[in-house]
Length: 132
Length: 132
DNA sequence: ACAAAATGATACTAATATGGTATCTTTAAC
DNA sequence: GTTAAAGATACCATATTAGTATCATTTTGT
Image 1 (cartoon, rainbow over the protein chains, first blue to last red):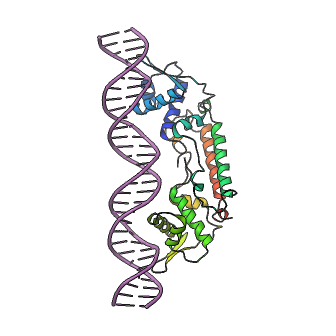
Image 2: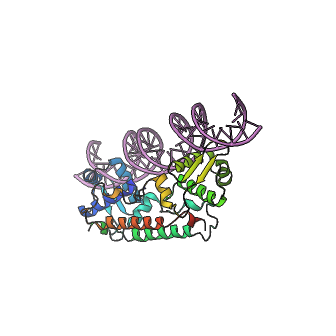
Image 3: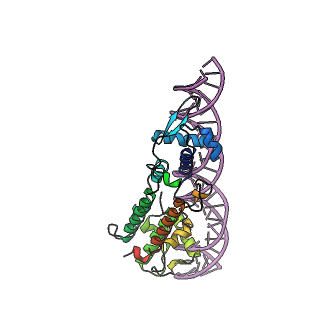
């Protein structure tokens, strides 16, 4: 089971490339050429990032996308949340009562603990840290 | 994203019930009545557990399934592996080169670390510990 | 012997999530 | 006004997940 889905992956690659590339406004073509991501899919992804305020889009000839958030401020989990929703690793065990004592069950505690740890670790990963 | 899929969940509920129930051979009907799991789906799951040596099946009238492994010895990860395969949380990032220095990238290290931790914690959860 | 009650084996189907395409509209530069 | 870009949105393909259906085989009890 993967932690990262493909659109998240593509989004991160695109953002990384945008930072490395350095130009102010980067057109989709440039990303497509370099990252080998299918253009319409990537466009959809970039539109989402635009709506979420990570990128700012510019229409018309010469248009493209500008990164408007400091790479130090973009967390991996931000991008994951955008494309995958919240993590919720510990969900379905307790929808019904597998466990005799739902409230105090050590499994629930442990799964919560695991999830907390994963979130904590992921939260420490910034876009900037992926480029070093 | 869930860590546990439905068949794993059902399998664990069934095993827990079997332990609590206490009788030597438990028929599917009993599990279906108590756990509200669709019978044909549960049967498929139990057949798998039989093949994997967690349960032993008995055919014919009065048949059913017997738990043949000590609940202390059944790990949550055993059941997860059976129905979901290995975890592989850190897969797809490095199929292609998102990262300039694949070998030493701190992200890879951190994802590995996360996965190791999750596996370590999950490995400490036995069927018996779910019943206490 | 035979009916009943159980699992074994296996193929099929339905629902959902994922990974895209296609198409048309709007905007901006030249 | 033409061209090159993004916006919006509907659609489609594939894979995974969840579940059904069916028939064969085995065992028990009469």
